[in-house]
Image (cartoon, rainbow, N blue to C red; front, side, top):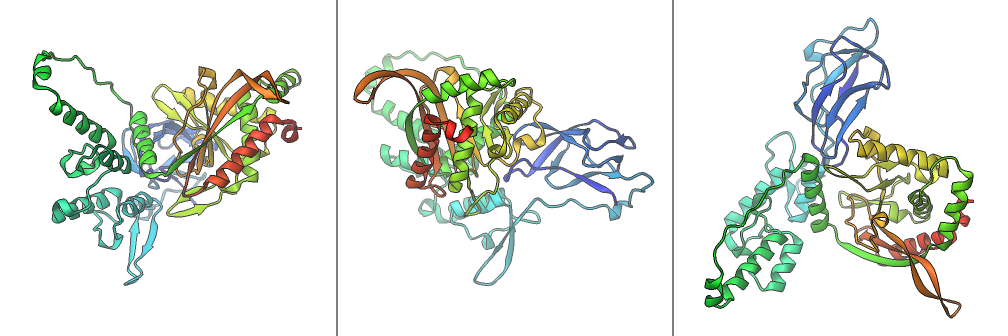
Length: 442
């Protein structure tokens, strides 16, 4: 039976991908595991390997085509197998949909996960939304909200991010009077700040304003890659929709450094402090499954695997390559896999699996001399750990001041999944493992 080659998805909200290049031509023989094509998704450009061996046939997408996720774009035929007639070829398979049932009339409504989240945010009944296609998309929900707002006038619900609403209240500004720059005219935090600055300028003394000579300021628009645009959109969505809270803990890293020195002497592979931290975090996640969970479609989902992702800065944005089944790996294997996924990410050639399945993220800026910082949660994950540098500080030990190597950990949590007590317990476990790593690594 022919093997269908489909446009894969790297994330829950991804709906399309761009075919960059075929490495094989139609009619060529392909071998399982060899690169077959390169695609560009919302996250990165990745090479896709051939799932089976055979002959490439019935190629329906060309380089540059924007293809819906799940659509069949080629077939791989077994030796001697013939391609089916075009009518028999699998049509575009729709991306995963969420079935929403209206409890009042039991009418089934098909909507994408992103459309459902947007509808929930704006308190929209999906049964009232008209889909432009076979299912309701985010754009359909936003169009419905805009239409309702127009009908209701200024008394309707204005499109605005939660942060924009809070800033408007603090600045005593009316949201209806602020021009929004977001999707469908939504008011963003930056719009509120701009409006506040304008009000302050208007309240300034006329003489002071008049004395300022009008001189054009030279500006330059920085071109953004698609990856950077997507990163900006996703982080904005996380910041404005995920209820963040933060827990900070200072930890004595003396035992961690001592263990690192021993490991470097007996292990041939290059072990980094990040490897040790990831190993300890993975062990803590196994003890605290809620920190390893996700918020999906209004529910808490517990992940069976511990797959720790590492935030990696690349030229065009930010990638989070994943070390799968982190808690099951020895230090040598973990370091080898971490090196491989990070190198591929920095080279701009991550594998498809590198960017899938992450359940928790670690972001380490200690190598840049950063003492501490607060990271933004990477949805649908429940939390992210920000790691600062190790620095000598004077701290009390047995009642006496001593100099100790200290580091600061900051845990950002999605309060819908992890409450304060659970977050504190998880961070306490991580801290105890760092201060006594032999209990985990031996």
